[in-house]
Figure 1 (tube, one colour):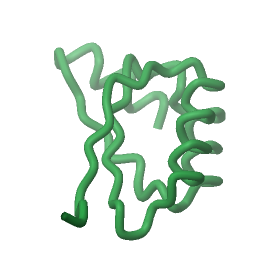
Figure 2 (tube, one colour):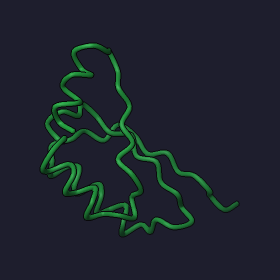
Figure 3 (cartoon, one colour):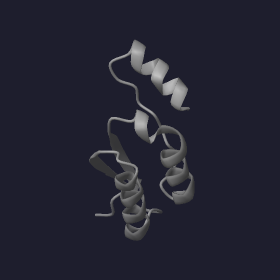
Figure 4 (cartoon, one colour):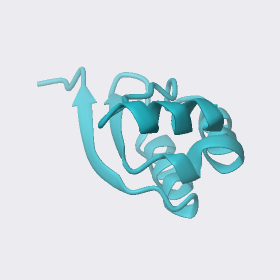
Length: 81
């Protein structure tokens, strides 16, 4: 994945990468630490409020910070009114 991102970076000004659901915290953390953290300039999180708890969101935010990745924003879907 890291090599793919390097290639894309050399050809495009912006590349969007879907890292998968926030509920899979271990997968997100492992992916960031082992393969792509150094290749990401920033992350925009999208949270499904129906299934992602505040605690899960906090863990993912900590993983991003630990990986040295900048969190530029959070979009929250399915907000109950």
